[in-house]
Amino acid sequence: MVRRNRFLTYLWWGLLICFFLIGIQVHLLNALPKHLRVLPGDSLNLRLFPPYTLVSPAEKDFIQISEGNLEIGPTSPDQASLLISLWGMPVREMVVEVVPELKVMPGGQAIGVLLAPAGLIVVDHIPLLGTDGKEYYPAQEAGIRHGDILLKLNNATIYNPDQLRFMVERSGALGQELDVELLRNGQVIRTRIRPVEVGRNGGRSPSFLLGLWLEDPAAGVGTLTFYDERTGRYGALGHMITDAANRRIQVNRGHIVQAQISGVQTGLRGRPGEKIGIFQDERDVVGTIDKNTRFGIFGKLHVLPGNNYYREPIPVALAHQVKKGPAEILTVLEGEKVERFAVEIIKVNRQRRPDDKGLVIQITDSRLLERTGGIIQGMSGSPIIQDGRLVGAVTHVFISDPTRGFGIMAEWMLYESGIGDTQIGNPPRTA
Image (cartoon, rainbow, N blue to C red; front, side):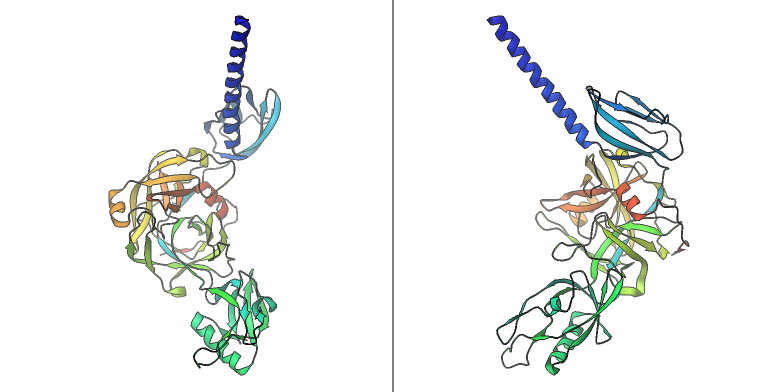
């Protein structure tokens, strides 16, 4: 009986250890990317242990596998589908793509972001209670949608909310409809809308509204992350531009402009700081915006900015090359001067799919901490450089600790920008 109990105890502990080890392996397996980009000559450990095995197609001899290690031969761009097996049964497929090393110029310059040269962005519809006690939805009935840019009323270009209010009040008082011109997904849409009278206030003239929640198309100040000297393609911000309801804003005729930082509001625990920027609308345009995604904004520069620290392009790190340890960021705190500051990458998330929070960084530079308190608004897009490679960009600050924040992997921004494409346009001029 004693031997039997001892045997059952050993068996129980053995099963627990097996389940624990398998659980660790399942966790590591889930952390592996579905699509892995590598450079010719790369060597990396995928941290797979028995009973998991990695199998490469026989015809793909540029990949050598040994105990979970991948060795990539000196090959031209190619790809292979690897199989991850458990006790000989396939459980996962992972595409390994060999890509050439790509180099870009790091940014750090302050930019103003304008999502349209004129007009106001439609955020939402607002129900209106008319003087007759009925509820009206004039904008919705006119076919106006969230994300549209209201460009013109009665053929007059709209530049600010005050101008729009004046025109709506005048047309409403005359009992006239307004001809509306909208921009939607790059196409001009025309419709008509009748202002609704919503009541009198202290004997003043009636107030007329359109039932629209509108925002100015200027999205504020951010930071340029990188650009390609050959094509002028760039990436910035590292995160999506959203409206007040946290929905993605459609980019139609957006552009970026030169910005000067006139001051800094220091960040505190529970209250993020911010850069105070000045820019002069389309008079200082340096590039266009053609994409607004969760990885940032992307487009083409007309003018290439200078960089005091990097005169030549630097390699872009692939996700598996990023590691914990010292790094630096480039950003502007005064005027247009790009400065470099020390940071520490304290966490690297091994992601199965691209995401905008692949890194956690901590500001370690005493100069930056003294001037800003840590990461502040307007710093989004500041390039993170480690061992001579562009590894990522600053994206978000921790509200509870402004010395720390998230960063996005540079690899995701690079391929979103289209710099890896073969089409090369006319090179922009240098400032």
